[in-house]
Structures are given as C-alpha cells and as structure tokens.
Image (tube, rainbow, N blue to C red; front, side, top):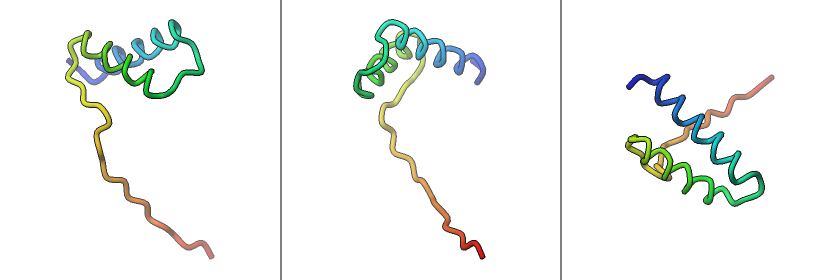
Length: 61
C-alpha cells in the first residue's frame, strides 16, 4: 500500500466520522472512532504514540 493510499483512507475516515458525529465532542471520542475505522480498514495503528519534539530557540537582532 502506498503513502497516498494510506492518506486517502485516513482522510476519508476522518471526514466520515466528522460527518456522522458533527462538531463539539471531546478529542478522545474522535480518536477512538478513527482508531476503530482505521483498524477496520486493515491498517496497523498505534494510539498516543510518544515522539520527541525539539524546539530550537533563535535570537533575532
């Protein structure tokens, strides 16, 4: 499966979830629904994966 195919599944799943549930729910609700939809689509999914973030501060003169 290509990156574009995976992206299409993810974007379409997000759109369908939002279309069905609408706005205003907790992020965790949308996350759980997206997890379920992606697993049903046959993707291997990890939730709340930690990843390092680096912030480099620069000085502006």
